[in-house]
Image (cartoon, rainbow, N blue to C red):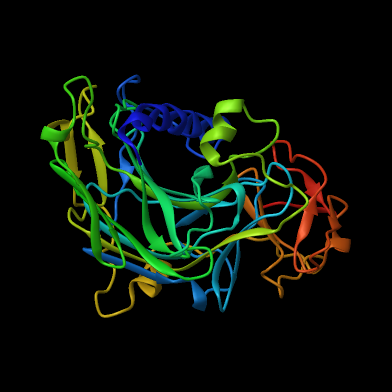
Length: 372
């Protein structure tokens, strides 16, 4: 990308992040730089975590699904489909990491303005991003003659960015047709992005201007898809995403096969001391939790350290079809058919249900059964 465009794309990428915040995809329940006494954040007590989504049939332990959204799990992996206006299916780990590496095997969603992402983010608004637009953020020519697709990397340190924090480069071949492995390796003094195990970018403190910071706090991993090109989004957000999305052209689907995490600082939890948000203020707590059995696959070990996904257990609510899954007000509801619930109607895709109301908290009663 020409140097003259760096500031422009840096500005619109910040607006893209702001849109994600407005959509409720990135949310800190307690920012320790602003609030005293924030609770310690759950860590992962092992040096490795691995999950193969192709072997899952419902929401796995140690993952949280965005409210009112659907992520399906089948032999192809975790399916994040943008079907209707406002959809933003996302998953994130229920644990944080202070440093290490993650590898996500992903195929991005096609579509003008449709954004797939793999993002590390923390409560102090630290963030390390992979962002993918189904039409490569409007960069031309599209598709390119060689099939190489422009993708974005980005950094925020305590919400601060700078000219050059975001890069847009043609780094990956046909990512909407092929699976690739996208990786980030990070610590307080470096960040590296990889595609298929090849280093594509590295940032160190010397590369960052004095008014900005390296991400230093514990972060969780979030995966998903959302519509940056929603016609109701602001002009600059749509410009960043690549243009207005054809809302009748979906579904637009991101697939994730697996996630592997190398955890450099195993911990039961991480606690901030003071309000600096800097690495030397973070306490690594190693007591008070069970360490996963290293002899088991990490995905199996994760299931052994957390309870199963809760669901209604009445005979009126059989749970034999896990594809019908939606989280309401923090709980997962599994139903066998759209007809069972007055809150849903069938969509064109009969393997999913379309929401026709917003679930109020406290949890509502559907089909005569209180959500767990």
